[in-house]
Length: 394
Image 1 (cartoon, rainbow, N blue to C red):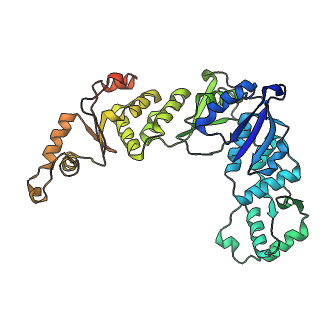
Image 2 (image 1 turned 90 degrees about the vertical axis):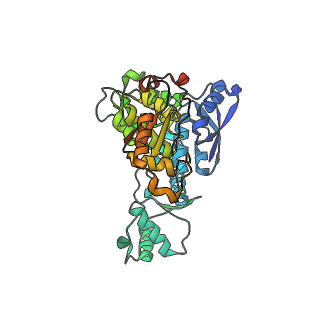
Image 3 (image 1 turned 120 degrees about the vertical axis):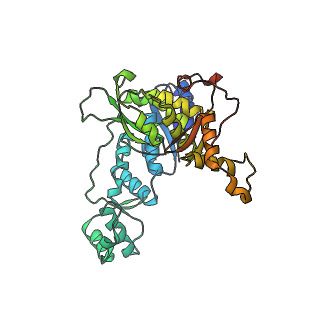
């Protein structure tokens, strides 16, 4: 969406690097390596000199020849990437009116530019008035609130009562706009740019309750976590306090984890193991957690990484159901509908459960088929845990 040509202002002889924003999760470490020879890309310092900005937001060219922090530029780009066309006009119009140059100001503007009205077409007063009415009501209104409104009059009142400022992005009516400072220059405000497995709030241990926090969206690269820690003034994991915010983990895992005593690297690696799993695999993991009763994130991760050591059938909760599934649906047998009355599903199911050592829980039927004990598996030595018959799920 945005390309920034970055340099080291103190050492122009080092050359430049062109960085695309937003930075993809898998590209983050590569970008850091790209900037390292230039002596820029610090976690906290604004050491990236912006030689040129290209892309979908021409107003950002006001930042050229200023310095910014790499993560600030990335956060700004992520905020802007979510904007619709009208929000783009609001942001760029107000940035132009206020002649904003610093990345901190522009980040803060993304949170409040929606309060201004931008007009690009004065021909349709009804549409103009409707847009202004919605802007003044936080961008949305119920059908009941919209009913009976004279949007043409609302538009005329706007044009009569406010002086618009002409910009390249439309005529801006600021509606008594006031900039809100949500970004303090170190900790980025909470913002979900893309799906994550878990969001946690990170703060300095024993800090005052009203102290600003930092937010992590796991899984993240180790370098991203360490940089977020530095920005939050946290020097070590022992100085950190974590608070659970949201999770896409199976509910059995959420119930198992003790966030006050979990360490961040283990939580991150757990989320990395869970991220690629399908919904069926997540259900299987939930069943494995109920079976194995892990005590920490590291042990849950071992289960997630060794799901092939389990047999799982979703939604089966009794020996009869399991026996019927095995005979009719598992494709291990040639089921004959004409002989249905002669099948003893419950008896066969009980035999299978006894033979496999499986259990039924709220997710379905699960049996562990590995050669190590479950305790040994969860301690992190899966290399020798090769079942003679690989498990699976249905």
